Length: 502
Image (cartoon, rainbow, N blue to C red):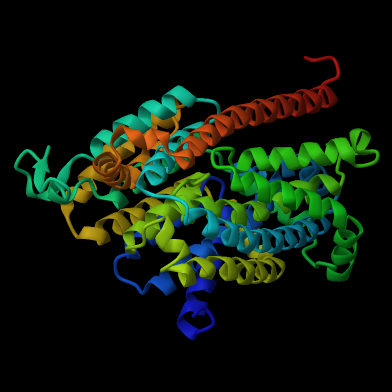
């Protein structure tokens, strides 16, 4: 299915979009959201190929992180600590080449973990009934609420409000209209694409425009001092010398990805911290341009994708904003996360694993040969970039239903998204609650009618509840540890830059 001309072309397009989005600071989410407008109108295999290709955005995150010390996304932060000093020493090509190969190996290990995890999940999912799927939907909303930099209560409030919005429209269970206020547009509920564009794309562009950071002169200087002639064999040799570090940090990324709610940022910093604590001499050289400080976080970056897709497909619990958009894409194409993805639509599920492997290979090849152009893309001035992206995402939102009201919905949620971003309110729980709301409603009524309150006596359901509490506790601990690591790294860098603490 994948190795046909159109799906392969779609995969290549997705990789190119991901590489461009990853190279633009703050641009990966808006570029991914652009694809949503086409979900209604294309073949599912082609659509999934594009989305899987778009999952390798982390490969290009290292371009601005290493060249300028500006992360392309949240997952490029730790790479800056050693990647940027290497660039300042004139070793940017070395750092980029090693980063690309580490990302490739991490992506392949993540794909292997994906296939193994899907096999296990298929056996476990057969033991579940409607009560368990109801509890999994609750777990999904709870877990994604944790993804929000410790704003747990704000995440739950946002998810609760979003769940209320899912009550709008025609109720398939009772056959009645709810909260439509005689507006025909609301019969099908709040459309997903304008909400996504408003919550995620517009705030990022608004923030980028307000920053007003013009780095064109710095970009030109960075490009001029960097020789983009990669020594491939030297990079392969260097990654091979640190193969066990690549393997260990890839496993960290995979395991963190399988834990909904921990997030990609945590995996990134945990891998860097592990290398800092376990590698010989790392405490003296990390932060000054040690190539191991580039290998560790970038290997974990791509490995986490294979882990995060498993809970997204198997139970509808995404672990990041990118996975939330992937979940929305699946729903728009008519696929329901859960048992169907592991049984009836298993071929679609496996398509993700195979696609991750192929996309990582293509992304690495493109990165080697297109880095000079990616470097220039990553430094586009906000005044040029923002209007172009806003026009494209607006057309994407309008294309879904061809209704002017969609633009009004997009504007309303855009204002809400700006407010949430400014005041630290997490946005992923809102999207997940909207996506899982119908499933939550359906399984609740099925469970209540079939089992009554005795559904809480089922050992499977009690097990999921126990896992929910355990993962919440563990996720909070991991996030606190990550925050402490970040704070310590910032303090160390500040003390090295200004020993007197001025």
